[in-house]
Each structure stands twice: as C-alpha cells, then as structure tokens.
Image (cartoon, rainbow, N blue to C red; front, side, top):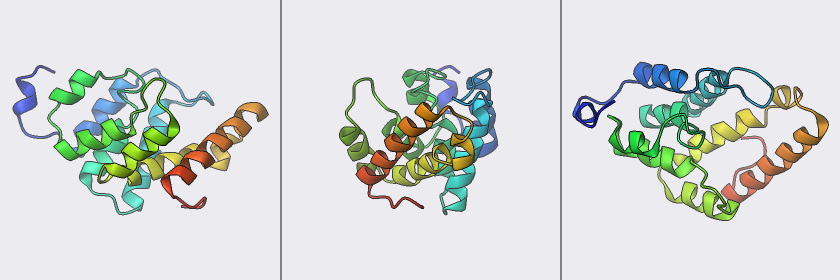
Length: 157
C-alpha cells in the first residue's frame, strides 16, 4: 500500500480481516495451528465483550507489527482510524520492554485493555494450552497470569 492509498476511505472490518490473514499467511502458533485462528478468536472475543469496530480491527492486527507481518511504517500510513492504530501500537510488545511498562501503556490507551483481555483469554484457553508440552504450558500459564494481574484483570474474564 502506498502513502497515497492511505488517504482513502478507512478499511472496513472485512478488509482488515483479509489483510491480517494475508499478512500472517503460513504462520502457525506454538501448537502448530494456523495463526489466523488466533486472530479470529481474539476478534470474536473483542466483539463478544462489547468491543467496537476500532477495537475489532485492532484485534485482527494486534500481532502484525510485533511479528513483523506488517511494518510500523505500514501501520502509520494505513487507512485505519487513529484509535485503531493507537490500540495496535499499545498492544505491540517492544524488544526488552519490562512487562510493567507494557501493561502501563495498554492501561493508558483507550480501548486497548479489551483487546489485550481477549488476547490473553484465547492464549490461556485450557484447550489451546493442552496442545503444548508441560514446560511450555507452565511457563505460558504463569506469564499470562502475571500480565492479567498487572492489568487488573481477574483470572476468569
């Protein structure tokens, strides 16, 4: 996408979904499942929690920059709402960033907590974790619980 295209009408949710699926094409999660399944689950989780279109779009794109599926420059120039871009930036982990700083940025960005909540819920889904080896399952369960605590989320939400 060129900078000139970025000034057109904002992308609709179907376009954002297609773009995210294409950007993550061929990627798999830790259990070997197509990565798009995780993106879909997070977007559906945001919708089920009452999220709006900006948050649902951010859910589709929540790992795109972090995973180098799309560049930060692409995000800057994309025909997306400022709020969607801000949420994606907030939930994008930075190399070497302490979890406390990451959580603080999420909490300081309107709309980002709901997206991260849906992401954590899917990441910590027992059925999803059951596909992993015991050591990985334990490490990730502890990691997700710590992030939930930093974000002030109860363990069931």
